[in-house]
Image 1 (cartoon, rainbow, N blue to C red):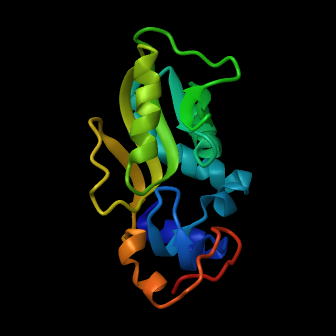
Image 2 (cartoon, rainbow, N blue to C red):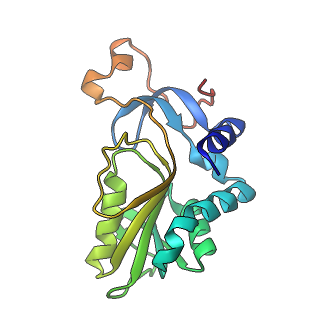
Length: 193
């Protein structure tokens, strides 16, 4: 699947949105990728999972670890394609951790998979969860990298598409300066040109 195919899929699913969004990183942006609108279709999720699994296959991971909530579906589909186990980390009292009986063993081979990388913060935090358990983090992967190269991870990052959408610190956001109201991601579905 190439970049144009992926952009077309996001557009067909009304998952490439414009407005004034507060991203999970805290940054503001005029564009938002609502991967859930693509991944809600099992056929699309399976296709993206297969494509994302391909460069990870030679690493032979035992487990795919994803951050909840955005990474759950794509992590599961990548794990299915790899024949690996799929688990997730979730926040408890503001800290990302393994819950629900999930564990990792010493030196377990893990890849971290999520939907969109913006700053790399949640990917790094998920990697730390694995390392704290003694697991070996081999790589990270995402459907979309919108970090503009600033997500610097200490493992390879495999993505299906890089997309440059501007992001701003809230204090210098031109949309805030114009008085544009913040849109909750997913509440308004207007396709970006």
